[in-house]
Amino acid sequence: MIRLLLSLLLCYSLSAEGQQNNQYIFRHIDQGDGLLHNSVFAITQDQQGFMWIGTPNGLQRYDGLRFKNYEKELMPLSYSTPIKNIYADNANNIWITTTQLARINIIKNSATVYDEKNLLKKPGEKFV
Image (cartoon, rainbow, N blue to C red; front, top):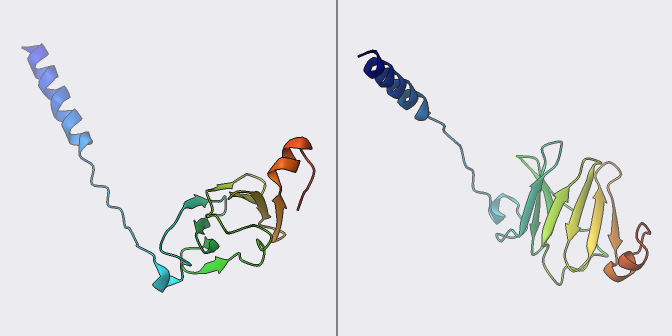
């Protein structure tokens, strides 16, 4: 009898915790809101909470209200192919890959583009 009561109590307490009401708010953002292109190929979030979005038309930073475009900073980077990956590291850098590799320093607002062939030959050197 005690086992039956304990098992019923256990089943009742498990079912009560299993059904939590989590409500998420989704906001769809498109070109009308300032996005450079409706197709997004890569996205990441940095330590400050900014969202970095890679589209066929370039790179953007989104703060939840406004977009900042990073076209001038990445002029040397070829946009003939879309951005494949975006990665935010712990040193205030955003790393971007297309057919090349680029690093944007968020603090200095500067970009460095690395040539893959030369980078593999001489790691650690800067090639533009």
